Image (cartoon, rainbow, N blue to C red):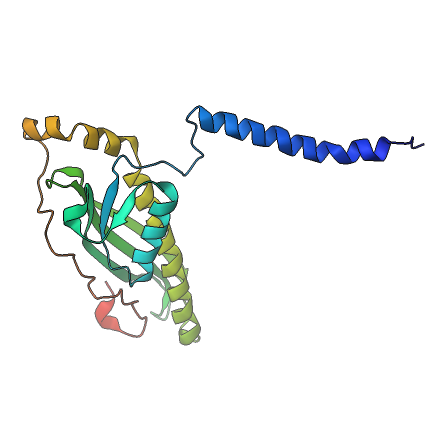
Length: 220
């Protein structure tokens, strides 16, 4: 049996719950609580030494803006408090399994990316660090073209993972501590120094060339 006004009362509950959630969110924000994945970086300006004309460069910029919206991305390293330098990046394609006829059954795809983060004086906030990502891919030599497309798709997914890992490293508490204590660390003489005006490291090849299963020269 339904009584008058029962339906109206029930319909108000979702709105009350939304209001309570909104109030809780505002309270947590006022207390300095940050949502997971949004960890502001300690510097006000950042230069990214990765071409913004590449998908990887665009993805890195998008992720950093989302994580640290108050950090301005500048186009001149001389204007930056921190500089992200790209040291090296390579893609690999390796045979890992053969069948009884000696044909490849599985490949291993890899990305090895090396970067560093320094302050305006060249002091390392993150010294040279390599991030490596590998994926296995079954292979059938009867559908080469389809597999080449699958390789492209896998590399794009791996590149997204690489952006996430790079973001976590750059927004880690250790980076904030290194930046805030840069002067003291520099006096200790234990902090690696780099050239903050060094030219951007170009991709090798540029942009990343996807290895092909039909080119034995790039198999390793």
